[in-house]
Length: 286
Image (cartoon, rainbow, N blue to C red; front, side, top):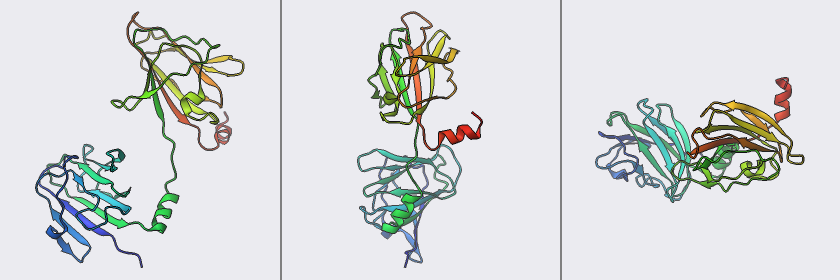
């Protein structure tokens, strides 16, 4: 027989701060029907420990529905791993939003309504069947990756199609972008942007910042190094239309700095191709 959810109603008189450990004690709750626990929280509050006040095992996986008694875009929730990584972030709304909390995970909240609105949790420990059901409905989804090539002294971007260019991208923790301080030129292959040498291709958009409104984006065929100029005379800081780069093709960049010797940047956003791209093109008569 399936167990019913345990409902937490978390009431405070001040905002949740997102960082302070919350002193949640099951013995201090008002309990109704052995399933509804109403807490009046005093003291610092921002993060819930994995055991949720001693009502659950800290090492169990849980399906948690989270609702909030107000609509405020500044009020947000997070699932935080035992190592401090943000697993998931979401806006708080009155409608229940469900997240999976893994062993050791914590729930963190930031609110901006002066404690006038309660947070409500609907919590179930997950068994094997629950986990399979959840997994079948939540397959991995592709997400875009943002790259940034920085010319610290305004070195021009040049296509130089005969050369292969593999920028050494490193994650910048301050921005979350993959950045490279690199003055090289040449064709950047799809594999350098999609992390898969056998990738079926990717969708690409770029923009230049600090350039002379003369930027170009070249789509390059790898074996012949012949190229097509997909975008030209690009305005500064404006993103290009989305282009498709296939298999082992690549892109090449071309732009000059607005001011000689000054900083110039190229941002590249990449999304791997998923599904039947040809079917989509056929449907759209492309």
